Amino acid sequence: MERDIFKKAVGILFKKNDRKRFAFIGDHRSVFPLEEMCRALEVSRSGYYAFKKRPKSQRRVDNERLLIEIKRVFWLNDRNYGSHSPRIWEQVAS
Image 1 (cartoon, rainbow, N blue to C red):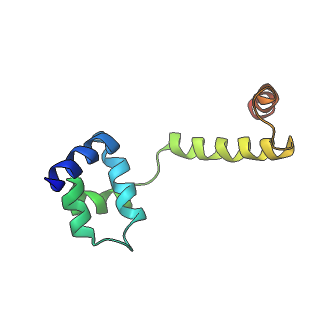
Image 2: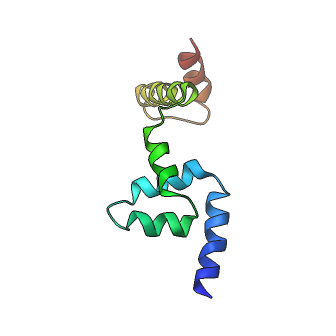
């Protein structure tokens, strides 16, 4: 019964997104055994290791750089957001 509930929860939480599942496994390697996590999340160990070796996509690299710039501008504007967000957009976009 509990296992069925867990399987349904996994499907809802990760929505069959292997990248999120593999990231979860990587984040929790020190807490749970790899083989048990792979079995519970219904992914293969070889898939996890292939994911670890795969380089980041250019889009992900660009998004990470953009996030750093947005945070920098956010802090320069006294951590204001909301009505001040157009200022952040203007500074980041330029």
